Length: 508
Image (tube, rainbow, N blue to C red; front, side, top):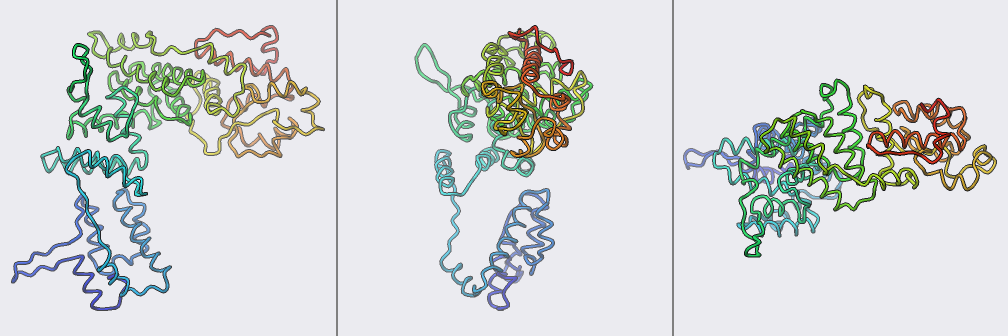
């Protein structure tokens, strides 16, 4: 309002609401009435664009600051730009009347609660009304007030703000990993209540009195919480940064992380990985990741319930915690972990789902195709892989071939019904699907549809070296893939038509 009006009284009224000029005769100190003392670059922004006259009209500078590293600076710059745009679009607005209305009838209310239960209730109400607060907003305040040293409090506030800027909407998710590591049980409430009830004020069941009693906190509020979050953020960065070539002298670790990131489900495998690295560093960490991935995907594909899968990951956390306290070497601890039953899964149902049932359309279809590519990359696991935005699962034998196509001549209706959606008929492509090109006969489909869409997928490249795609080619491929998967998961698998398996050398 100050920077857009030409009315001298309105300009002065706004300026006085923003900044109090000092007057030594009356003992009035100079004071900026808008306070946000989180860090120097935030204060600099307020001085330059809020305190300084015409600061809010420096549109180009504000546009640049929308990309600033500090999340508060980004948000404030964007807010000023949005308000300017709204005022520009409202052609009929009278600034003097509008400001007068704001000053007389609009009230800003600051609400604080002395009891945490009230804060939870307020948080829920505000979220239900459309003001999307994050759990981390209250968790931050809850812990900062327990830090008495002012310098340390400021440092933790800066650390928290940096995390918010880096992780954005994923910040609450990261905090849930930390919660899981400490609690090792399925969450039953929102993140705030989980921290308060299960971490800061846990209870244990007393069998003699048959009642719950207060137990020691798993983590104390204040510095201990901030340090724990710092510690696991460091572990998170190390395993997720894609620079772990040194672990195996190849990209196997990072490529398997990339496969797991493509699951499309909750990242329940992350807390065990962070917890393992916290206790054992990188000792046998690739072997752990392989077993963790096999357990995670084994339960998933074998159609275990979500609760079962979550508890399975928690059991791994508990086993790591138990073994970490044994008076033996880290190598011995990890070997004991690998030989324990926490990695067991229903191998029969797992391989049955992939062998006999539809894979296309399942939530794990993209994951298993990525896993196959991982397994076919060779001993060095090829180059470092990343997820592709348009990566999709495609049929080789199309779902709806034209009636005059070679597909219909080569595949009977019963063959198409049985095999179209199975593992052996699927490949990954790096483009959006094209239903018309997808129906082309095999040779044309390779040239016009697949050629420029499979360059990064070993399995797709291997399959499309074939000149033909007949029932025997599809079945050969199907059983070849099942054998590779079975070997990796430690499953004995012998297909019914073993005598015909791998007759085509292209599949070797």
